[in-house]
Length: 245
Image (cartoon, rainbow, N blue to C red):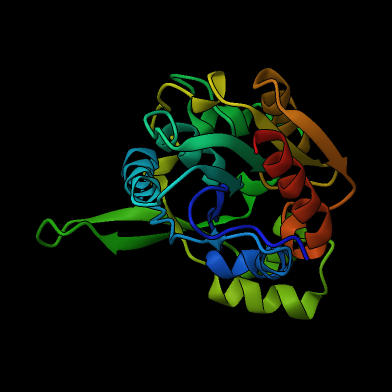
């Protein structure tokens, strides 16, 4: 075991989950990082929109002593792209099948430009209270009948049925909201690109990673590669830790 000191002298790894998921989506990676003596923490991404979520994650990062390596999956990539811009302790970014938008870009436009994504045809609208009287707004979930094929095709159907039942919807607001100044312009980046990503879309994930100047690891697998192949993702994170350390 590599015993990393827990005094803030080595980077803490912060794992940010994406839409239709929660922190438990990182469980298999967490146990591997902890076995290597890495300090790791997993905030709850609110999934209420880029500005709201990035402000929350920025505040979370700001309360961690010492350097931080931020890792994100899927929509979480858009969040850390914004949250890390003004976070003085972030030393690197790892994108796992994740969005890495540029300033002014909207996720809805990125998705519409993907030939590989089937997400838009798999979403179902739900309502949630905004806190303004009786006013409600739209949030989006994946149709459980399409969850396996659209989100996690390399996992057993029994497992994806559980994931579909426990998924966390994301506010529709997240998709048309423009992204801000990207942290990847000033930080070293790594990216895991999966060849079978039908959620964000392998094509646009690869394109965004290349534009960000990320060190890319391409893997055959679905959008939830941190669940289906956690060792691959863990190795990328460990490599990033070594490079920034």
